[in-house]
Amino acid sequence: MSGTHQGSRDQANPLRQLRLDQLRRRTSVKWREYPDDVLPLWVAEMDVPLAEPVARAITDAVALGDTGYTAGTAYPEALAEFARRRWGWDGLAVERTALVPDVMHGVVEALRLLTGPGDAVVVNCPVYPPFYGFVGHAGRRIVEAPLGDDLRIDFGTLEEAFRVARSGGRPAAYLLCNPHNPTGVLHTADELTAVAALAGRYGVRVVADEIHAPLVGAGARFVPYLSVPDAEHGLSLMSASKGWNLAGLRGGLLVAGPAAAGDVARIPFEVSVGTSHLGVIAHTAAFRDGGDWLDALLTGLDDNRRLLAALLAEHLPTVRYRPGPATYLAWLDCRGLGLGDDPAAVLLDRGRVALNSGLAFGTGGAGHVRLNLATSPELLTEAVRRMATVVT
Image 1: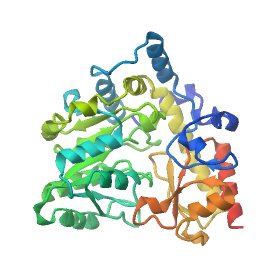
Image 2: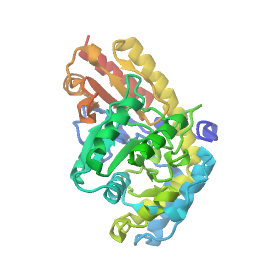
Image 3: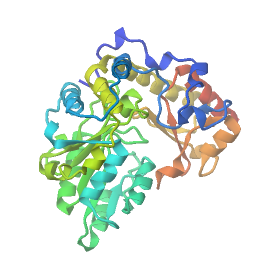
């Protein structure tokens, strides 16, 4: 089960395996967006080598020249087995899945199935910034349902958002981030059951972005939205992208609840054919054979959460941080530093640390930053040291 970190003792911590000079040779956006004097702890890329089973699967495919169009059901089968093994969930039916190019494009396709232009999509802010961009680009409008002060779903606020979204009888959807990005909050089975009941009462269709589902720390358990009572009309988007650092090898799965099978069957062929064959190979290998590597990573992330909390307590005690058990993201309340609504801009300019600005995460983001702690303890320590120089 997730949280036990089985096999992690036999694997080296992936977060400790690459030096800074090796990381700076990377050409992805994390390491090329800023000058070399900046430490990048922003976009959701991890400072890890590729898991060996994934690297082997890709290398074998390239050696065979297996670089054509994707086919078959190996990917959803691997995810279904992973879900049984890790989450105790046997409700992922392969016949109720569809390949999508990646999770956010899958979200857009799901919203197109369930809503029309101008219809409302409810989100719990502060939330992953592409929710705003992709939803707007799809011609839908955002209705915010801010999280509570405890960074959990506020059901009174959510109900009011559902009421607003459904005004005039128009269709509406709820784009649920599970686990939540940027807070790292892991929704409980009771919370998700309440979501399903409320959505059913108001006729709101739930689309769950569950891309961070594999990234759950020790002692915690991920609950798939589709596993709770009354969620049979829901849709979920899943991927190995975040758990195994595969953003450059795109491939996602749209998973339908039993009552939403007809919706997933309407996904256009043109969408599924846009999935990368090598991406599908990589994601399949990750879910099927990457468990030991993932467990070692999860142990390292648990260590880094504790380290970050200790570093902030020592060097930046006015920064508020509630370590969440999921994702590798830290949501930092920097309002006590007196750096204004966009502390990330100041920390970049004066401290040479790149973090995500909280402003992009919607209501509740002002005065906050998102820090990516999927890096080495040494780089995490240096980043906090630099941040502290800005206010001392």
